Image (tube, rainbow, N blue to C red; front, top):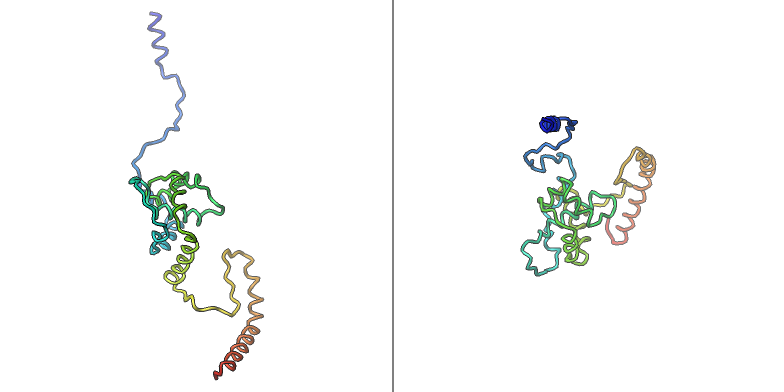
Length: 198
């Protein structure tokens, strides 16, 4: 009798219910969770026509389970684009496991920091500079339709990070425009007379 009372007392739901459990759900595609104006789409649009494979030194590898070098380089370049500081390879590894943009770029492979190190080791000398110039040329010429052979001499200033005080340049540019046109015209007439042009 005493045992039955003990069992009945201990099987009573005498606890506090905490509703903080994690609900299981079907896995959604990562691009659904990335906003449409996120920089990752601009990055992919800018880099889609650039052949990144030509910047790697030819290295023979028998590792059949290694990650795609171009994919790893894309992840590294995107990390340079989004971070304001030099990011470490371990932080990059962590981002590939937690940030949905990096998951999307790495095709859900979650590479380790050693994989990124190996990719950086087999890059050719000066490859980052060449990638930067090719990427800048592709953005300027193909995407923005800018002629790289035209140089403006009217004192135009384009700021990388414009802010509310950018208007201070306007007065100086308007005042010096006439002087710039006069000096440019005088210089062109000197060049024409030097080469014998009318």
